[in-house]
Amino acid sequence: MDGSDGTAENDPLHAELRCYEGTPAATGGIGKDPVNAPMIRHWCEALGHPVPPDGAAPATMLQVWTMGGLSGHEGRTPGYDDLLGRLDEAGYAAVVATDCEQEYAAPLRPGQRITFDAVVESVSPRKSTKLGAGYFVTTRTEVRADGVLAGTHRFRILKYAPTQATSVRDQAPAPAPARTKSATRPRPVVNSDNAPYWRAIREDRRLLIQRCTGCGALRLPWLPGCNACGSPDWDTVPASGTGTVFSYVVMHHPPFPAFDPPYSVALVELAEGVRLLGNVIGVPYDKVRIGAPVVLDFLDADDDLTVPAFRAVDTEPVPPEPAGTGPADTEPASTVTTPEAEAPA
Ligand code: ZN
Image (cartoon, rainbow, N blue to C red; front, side):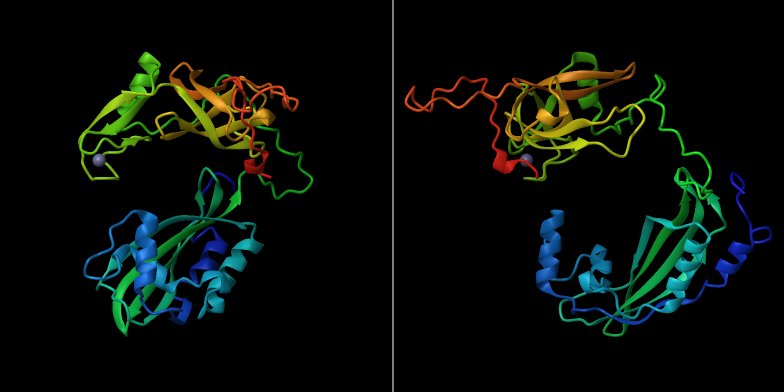
């Protein structure tokens, strides 16, 4: 069946799944809390959104009021679980959320009680995707405030059979992805807002930090406007090139073509105060430490891609000085700071 998408005529599973269309996915759902000012404030602070002066909830908070939290959803009906269970049985056990679409009918205000109902709106024919073949399942939730429609929330998931997870038990295991010269790194998204950033890296091997000409705030990655004052005007300052490891991970799994695990990826705090992600080079992956000094370097990942990276300044830990041999504040500048207490467990 691989490679050919089914239709209702030649895909009995799809015909069966379509019977769930229109089935309630949640009935008589009740929001656990009324619309409330603290939740609105927390949400706005988390997203860097101004708290609306009229006290109404931002429209895009619609789903917040129907979420079940750690204690789970209420009002969920067996129909939706049956549908997902049927897909699991048929081998489409993996799931990924693909998109969400909302329509707003009325603003939500603190004190309003939320109720909601959801239906299975559609199940697509079988589709081939990069993740694997599967079916898109769309649910539609109608959210009411004090009984009046406030908005509609459509949520689409893909239930799929992962390409690499073969369902044939006695088949030979899939070979590890080959790291050939044709395996290229994922490309950065270059657009009109950040093209000069990538051009400076590629053509001049310079890292430019964006600076707001309204308030002087530095920012990285580049953005169309200033988070501090909202000004759209900016210029750039070249990074001095020194920094310290603020945090890091060591990548072991999953393997990606063009990368050779294990390797470390660090969030580096530059001397200017902004932070940037990059590979740490010039040091074994297991020797990277929080607080370690690094200098900016550039990696020519392939013929068309240069990315910023960080080179460890010094990998040799300095042995503790014997007591009484000198003041503690005269350590050489190249000492690696390795505060073990801060290192991830
Ligand atoms: Zn500013």
